[in-house]
Amino acid sequence: MKNKKIFALLASVLVCASIFSPVNSMAASQVTINYWTHVNPPANDLEKILISRFEKANPNIKVNFLPVGESDIATKFTTSLSGGGGPDLINLFSSFWPKYASTGLLASVDYMAYAQGHGQKPANVSDAKKYFEGIYSSKVVAGFQINGAQMGVPHEVSNYSFWINSDMYKKAGLDPVAKFPKTWEDVIANCAPILKSNPGKSAIVLPLFNAGEQYLVFDQMVRSAGGLLFSADGKTPYLDSAASVKALTLLKDLVKKYKCVIPSLGPTASTDNIDVFGGGSSAMLAAAGSWYIPYLQDSFPKVYKSFKVGLLPVFAGSKPAGGAIYSYALLVPKQSKNAAAAWKLAGFLAANGQEFFNKTGVWLGDKATLASAETAKSPQWAIFKENLDTGVFLPPIIPIDAVTEKLKAAIEGAILGTTDPKAALATAQKAVLKLLSK
Image 1 (cartoon, rainbow, N blue to C red):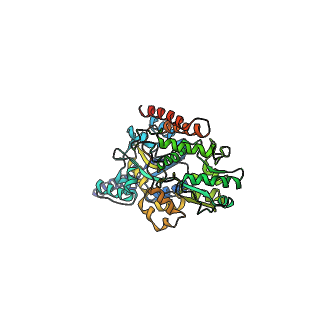
Image 2 (tube, rainbow, N blue to C red):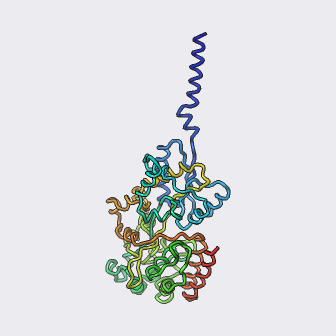
């Protein structure tokens, strides 16, 4: 009888042990997080590999990975928020996320989980925050804050540089080095020989029919003319300033007066200016960052062999003005039930900055990759670094889609239509003031 009691007790212990064993505990704490990002094949392919590594290192976390088209992701995200579903982690363009943060729909960065994603074990939140802030420059950190709160993890930080097709320059009798345009006046001077020697081609392609790209190009032009498009807080527009009028007049002259641009060559509403340049239909391009190099290599190997890149042109007598710094941010919706796991994944992805840069040309904003000897070996990296150093982050404009569409209407009305630049920008200023006052 005594032995039976002992065996019964042992059986009970074994049952309890099986219930509370680490294996069953892990199963009980298993979580699944949904990660959405925009379609970018090189980056998407790498992230699949990194997610597999993350899942192996964190067997209690499963990641559902969903690349979404750039034009659809913000709308899809908004719909998911109203429906109570959607991603636990999303990679969203810098112009889009401030509106979600301002309405309380995003959670601030979990520094502890981020540091754990980096393989760190900080003692407390204060130490974890210091670790996070040590990864990035103060300029980059501030670019992902709203009212001092850290809302996102930097993911893809870039700005536009200026690109030329050396073969088309040489055909025009222009030395690609000596005649690389430093000013917009240089661009105009190069147009005539390029057009004469490359019939049926554009001297320069502009980002037509794309409000976001036009905003980025125009912002830099206005700054090089001594002005600003918007105040630092994004609440006051200066679209009708003298600097803005000067910039739009220059764009109009490129098309109408100097015939540097042949709009019929593209882009169209369904194509992009980077493909016009890559396809050899234009000698100059002002709307691509360091990420464009692997894209050229894979899609347009002929132009890849002949491209040269430099700083964006400025108006004569102006100081260097780097392109507007745009970025993507890893963000966690406040409604996510697995926020800690999502921030841990964000930290893990961010910890692989050098691999991202090497394989995709994308810089994740970290100081280590920016300053590494490996990065310095990248073609033209000194140019990209100087461009970033002289660039500025875009201000947080809440109704960004509507605002950039008004700017796009003004730009295209002047350069493709017959509207006077000053009148076009005055109309845009009134419309944007109304949008920002809501």
